[in-house]
Image (tube, rainbow, N blue to C red; front, side):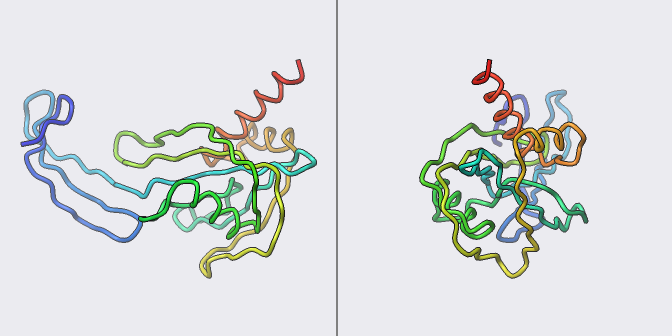
Length: 183
């Protein structure tokens, strides 16, 4: 038996697995000392990066998201594949999705989006000092580049048009930083 905080895991069974996610069911003893089950999705840790060009515009993507059945305006995102570092993933995804090479990458932080059922850390970055080349989209990606001023992006966050949480966090971070620098 394995302790996990106030929970005890009696056994674990993988219910589904592919290269990006794993779904498991844990047989547990709850903090109330009763038998139960707990379902957990383990997803590849990922990155989200917003690029800022020489005119202080944000370079984002508008991408179709299968699970949401909708287009979403986001920073460049991707899963950290086995054998790759976080920094390698940042540069790979920038090149693939927007054709960007960045000389300056700044780490902003990380967060867990759904701590009750999903194990996945998202690492947040800002990319600056950009050069542009051809994109290298994966064949399954439907991506449109979007360029917005910080104010436009912030308004889209406020109106709910930008709702991808890692992107929202980065835009709000940049907006607050800009307010501090201009006061």
